[in-house]
Length: 298
Image (cartoon, rainbow, N blue to C red; front, side, top):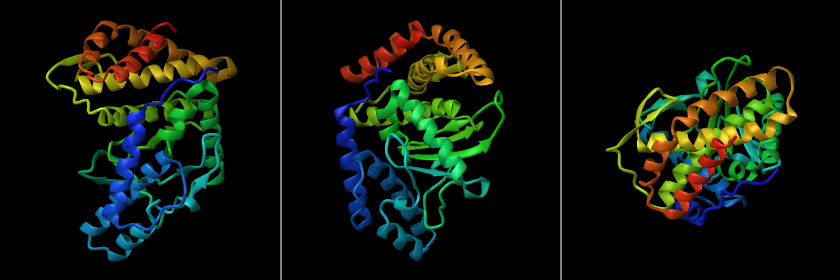
């Protein structure tokens, strides 16, 4: 299927600059050769882990992160069509809460273990489905670490999230179906991409104007509204492209999801045009418009 264009030169510059700065702060040893986006993601785990250890006075763990600026990813990787990924299943005890994030999160560290083989295979196939639908570049650069959370049943509410302090990391509930997991990896990778894009292009969105979000059923500042109007259309495009390859309950579930999203997105058409005017970078503004517009035609 036609690949979507997620290349944005300022993002590549951001990844290189931030990674260099983090490694300088940590006085870290050289990380193993990896893609720029992968090193960028893992460096943030090392930075947050080192800071947490330093605040706790844990010298041994602090020194471990300095010696492992890739957070020991070599021992954790799962091969996929978009490159080596880190798939973990931290469980409730492996999730942290702190002022760092409103939601729980997991840091790769000395005690991190790779996910069991079944979950690694599930996630590898999910990446393959996303790549087949044209999202290989998005997943390669913005979904480096996948934290699988609760196993649920098809039709249950699935919760996924990402946090700005850990770019390239996604947290997802799952139902054991790679097609559904592929959708949610794309959704969170989309949030990571837009966070990087806004930072890289120095776009500071005014919080004074709010827009009605049909997904939250409330008015939200432009930042949250634009994020939703980017990430949900990405999942709509993925779902529409992959639907033909599904059957049974998965097909019915995704068909219903796409129909629901069509109705929700349609209500954002006018406000999205107004919100886009707040994006000062013309290339980024056009990219957001193109994806939203394509999803409206599905």
